[in-house]
Length: 75
Image (cartoon, rainbow, N blue to C red; front, side, top):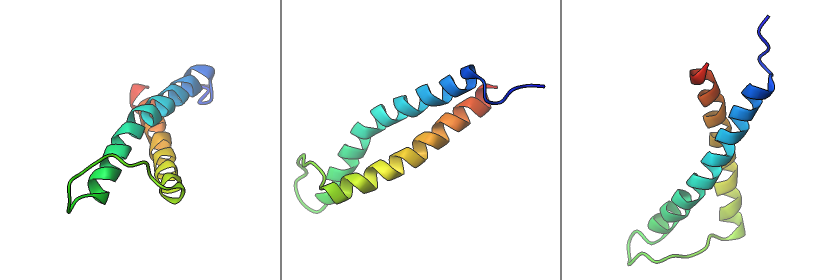
């Protein structure tokens, strides 16, 4: 029987998760600043701790989905 929890499968999900987190972090910072300054000149500002928490939680959820879907469609 095929083992769904092999190292190869887990490795693919983990690598996909971290690549998504790394790349998407920069995109989310840009979107954060565009949204925050949409009615005036856009400049770069670091999110507050509360906003960071929201950004990180959403990124983790979608990074897990990215990893699982990458594995699923790669199989």
